[in-house]
Amino acid sequence: MPKSTPAAKKVASPQAAADEHVSAPTAVAAAPAPEPVSPETLKAPLTGVTPPTPRKPSRAAAKYFVPQAETPVPAPTSRFADRFAPPRPPTRQMNNLEVDTPRQAHKADPKLANAWKSKAGRELTEAEVLAMPEAEYMNDKQLEFFRAKLQALKDDLLSNAGETTEHLREDTSIVPDPADRATIEEEHALELRTRDRERKLLKKISQSLARIDSGEYGFCDETGEPIGLGRLIARPTATLSLEAQQRRELKQKMFGD
Image (cartoon, rainbow, N blue to C red; front, side):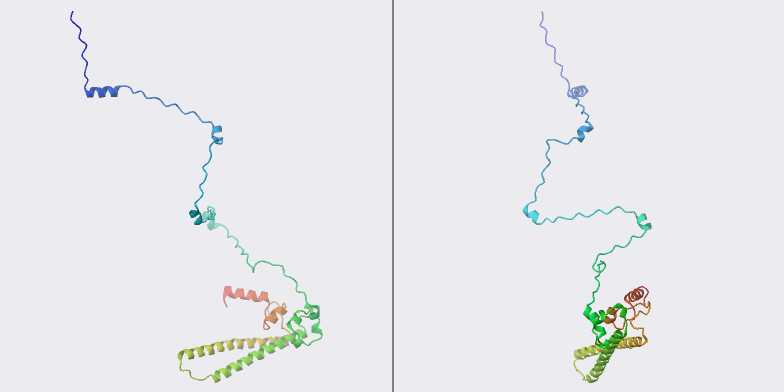
């Protein structure tokens, strides 16, 4: 009986092996589906987790580190709203001039308040005139005091004008140096401008003396209110009260001369 030979092994070609590998179903393990997370789990705080601690800057970095102030974020604006919105009131600056401080009433010295009764008007001092009662405003003693004050100021201005005339008459020497000559001419021009301002002041003094004679001295030309002893002592030629003078200066700034 003849022996059976083993079946010959089939040798497959490389192309057939590749086709067989591709056509064979690949077993892919399916990933498990994630479990749903409840809202309570999301809101619960984390336990057992420590936040990272911030690192401290080194000494060299801390030396040049400058903390910056937080700048406020401006509120969103609308061009249309800003254009047609009513004007905002001006902000008031709190400076020393605008702060309203309570003024203390001036208490007159009783010794000075009665000094005018025993002295002549030209012999009174400024403190004694200020201490006089308000009922005696622009009485004969006060008018005599201001008349003497204005006359002394007028005599002083006339004396200065005479000295300037003599000075300009004597200083007629010719200086060869142009720089020195320019300096002398500048001094003369400055002195002449000063005398010109004093000339205008002389005119106001004469008008004030005439107001004393007519009984109008010490009262405002616009409102008829008393100008005040303090203002008249500081400026004897004043014809307006402080409020009227401020209104006039404001009008001049707004509308010009």
